[in-house]
Length: 412
Image (spheres, rainbow, N blue to C red):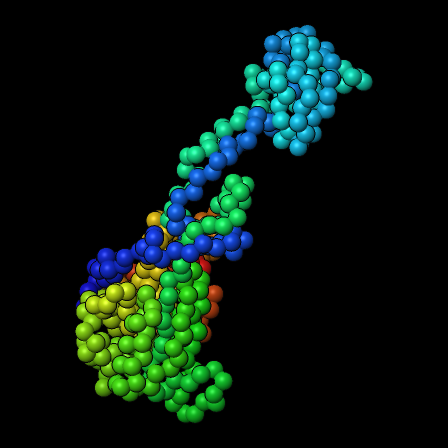
């Protein structure tokens, strides 16, 4: 049995990110949200494209208005310049142009006076306060210079990045393909959601939970259904999953019972088993293996109990999917130190994860443990979980208002 930190190190060292040449695709920008950029982007455009005004006001020559605080300057208005209009006049001494936010600065002008510091009378304007030199002028290429890197590879494309690409006139973008994650559940007792339950039978909720988590992480789930406790059928499904996926997730069948066949089948398929159990609760029975095939898939044999499935996914599988996806940073788990609202208990023998919610109380985050049993078989009180409190080995009690480390959960 390995420690949680050792297990994390072993697992992440096994992950090879997607290849930036082989594992990419070109997609329309409108459907690129949450995808990972595969190639750096440059643009032939400067940002701003030209000198423009950051304020509604008047485009002036600074030397004409620099003493306006003591003696207001009076300037002749030669034209109005709205956004999208190309100025026709060069500003001469004693002249100005009415200008609006985003409009092109006319030749001859070098400063903008905001309209609140002026008074207009017909075609003349009184400058009532001296501006700073070049005030409210956004200079060409001051945000970005054409030909340099606009966005680096390995970042997630969210709304700001997509807006940048749109402004740079990139209608299509090269992204990494979505990692493929095969999912199946094992057990004679498992039924689908539409089957009537007989005594001793339960619904396979794990496959639904894992599919949702995989989608939230930006990967593509491949659902392979329920596999009965039959070594022949299980070997067939595992071999198929390994051939088509980057990651394989099975739930159940990895403990030491008479019907737990997963580890033996992995060995028969020439898999190398790196982890068989982890010093954590819930989630002790965890198998991690790799196969000597071209796509080198990573196999996770997750526990069967629903809370253990979710905890082990959040703790180990989610960072793997993120690292595999090609993202260069932000794939590590996020831990916070917060205040505990409740008394938290553990037997101290294994690193223990308690599920619940983070609440912001008077500007400070508090962890509220979920009501009811923290049994690994209790699926019901997992609803609305957004954090896991972590009690290290040897820690048996955390008092209310005492600091506790939590694993913050998100939608990927």
